[in-house]
Length: 394
Ligand SMILES: CC(C)(COP(=O)(O)OP(=O)(O)OC[C@H]1O[C@@H](n2cnc3c(N)ncnc32)[C@H](O)[C@@H]1OP(=O)(O)O)[C@@H](O)C(=O)NCCC(=O)NCCS
Image 1 (cartoon, rainbow, N blue to C red):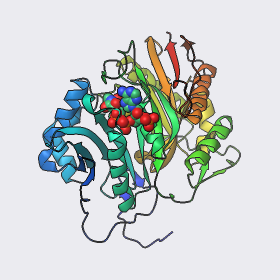
Image 2: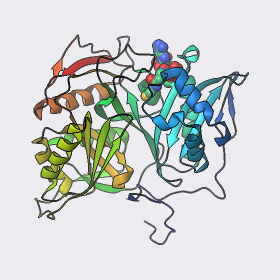
Image 3: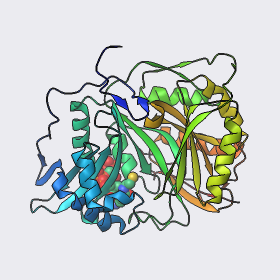
């Protein structure tokens, strides 16, 4: 660890995940590349309205990430280095595909991928995979560690592209996407839709020690192994005294109608305060609460068990900027709302992880009724992707 480097890489939430490897000189825009007669390039701030146009062409007005419709906001983000926006165009300039990467600060070392869309006429030709590969080359050249994304589990296509590029599932966010979102690919949803959390690593991250609760140790270990994280899973010391008061941050994502409670320091009062925050959020109509526990703090290993008593269950592990590193995410859907999900996965690891997430949801006491046939096909076989329609009941 180089201690006296300039603090280029400190993000809003504190230290980021690794030392940066800023390139020499000013950030450069990579040259366009051609794949046959399709050009792939970065979108300039002056073209920001094209993102909203593409989103509208695919989702109508239903896309939950509302700033994408606001050309001025898109331009501001591109100009500030907080949005890296890659597109594919036909030779006449028609936009075929978009893939975005958001950063919490221009020097962030892990990006959050999103705004993945291919116009209907161009689908199924690996254009999205090619644009994503272009973005990945940029990520690599800038020295980032990788990118994570919440890929819809309403269909397998974006998951397949992420697997193709070397990504892996690290969790499932049940009920993460509003039922009103119409991606134009999957059948209309009868309730909220789910997402698979993916991590795509391009270079090793910082060596770090993480502590997982005993209950979830094996799945955390397997996820670390499959993603090849440089995280060493350590035994948490016997329960030590927690500080009396917890510190956490609650953020709501209005478009998704979900809340994320990021624990900065677990204290004696954590369970009671999560309980009261959840009551408040659910009474305001929020549909799902996700609680992120920092994996670098041994206290997290202890408190997650008491959170299960509140019917919060395992969702997965992934980076969270607010927590300055890896977190273990727990989830809880609003019990009073009947929600239905069609959860599609595209790899054997994803299928096993989804099973784990569903079983833990049941074990934690959240009602879960599985409906429909379970098909066990996975990518790489001729069988269809695994689909587990499920319904949570009040
Ligand atoms: C998801 C999406 C971006 C994929 O775009 P794409 O350019 O068609 O993707 P690719 O061609 O790179 O496909 C990736 C994989 O999905 C398959 N695929 C994509 N569309 C398909 C279709 N309609 N039918 C069958 N397979 C399809 C591809 O064949 C490929 O699989 P393979 O490697 O086994 O051949 C596009 O379907 C889309 O815009 N959907 C609506 C918005 C959306 O759901 N975005 C994702 C949010 S997470």
